Image (cartoon, rainbow, N blue to C red; front, side):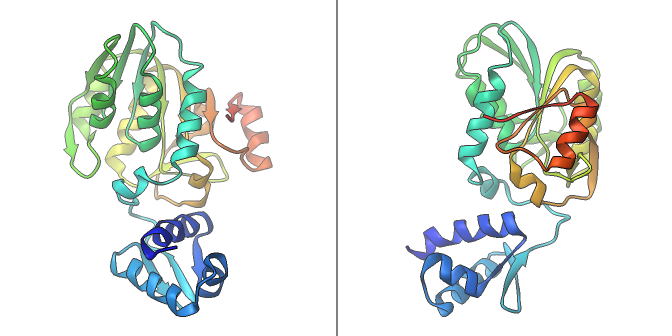
Length: 252
């Protein structure tokens, strides 16, 4: 396996486990320790990992992974979550899709829905759904975040307050074991809170890797969500909490 193929997988392992070791990666890829040291040095040079004795760790938890990296992370899981989620989205409804690569997967999965109105603060979602002629698209205004095509800030929050929609389909950057939905950008958090407030029902779409990540800003609790779509059952304690909150958990 070439270095260009190893590096994305090393990053996936680091995001899953929080850290990687030289010896563990050498055994995983069946290569020499020196080969792995070069791989980790390259990832450190790219600003994606921090080198530590014997391996590497993810960088600061106060900044999100770059958008291009997120687009390629857990693609199959996101597609499966999206496909399952849209089975519960009826034709003829209004819904809001927020910023995130998983909500972009939901947009792709909505390509055959009819007579729907999609509101979004995600320019990528709007561009995807342009291909569905039976979908009316409303892009709410705001400050454009060039890194990922998201619209954030007070203008966006105020614009969302002018609507009431049947369904919100939201994603988040991280989940903790208390059931809190977390994000990195406080402006995006305010937008997500406004979306949930204006929705009659709410769905969360998030793969299991979100439990391995940490972010500093709290959006809200899974207790505010009607259904959580994910690719694997959450830890038992959280499943019990969701049952008490009335939050459904659905896996593909």
